[in-house]
Image (cartoon, rainbow, N blue to C red):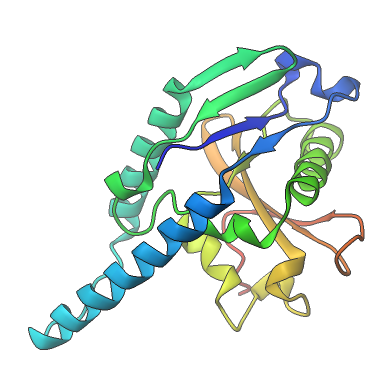
Length: 198
């Protein structure tokens, strides 16, 4: 599935009040998520039938898939007016759940815009980075939506947690934003490499 999304950038004057725009075909994302769930159920049944345990992949395996996905995503960037448009890679071409952004169906486009605006402000004003805020495609992080233990975001339900990723001088990190409820402002809660607490 190819998605087109926009994200704020230092090159497109995002810091001068230009809002980011997210344009995602939510029906396709929901359909794709359902297909993936069915595929996972079939694979789980086949794995159990073979008496094998399904591997989630090693850290190195996942990192390789993430690097390939992000490199393909980078190739799909083009500028349109004040926005950066991104042709998203097809997550079906990647293993271990890399690139699955079905969690975004929890939010409408206004909520996504507000989340990315808050994330971009945090990266620029607090972390002093010129990095873009990207949709999080790391399955180890997006697991927070289904995980009972929300780690650093304990006390917030999945509908009030938003993830994004950013590149800090070649090192991909993650930003977790939270809100008190629908309609509340997003606030940065944590930045780092995992939502799990020690």
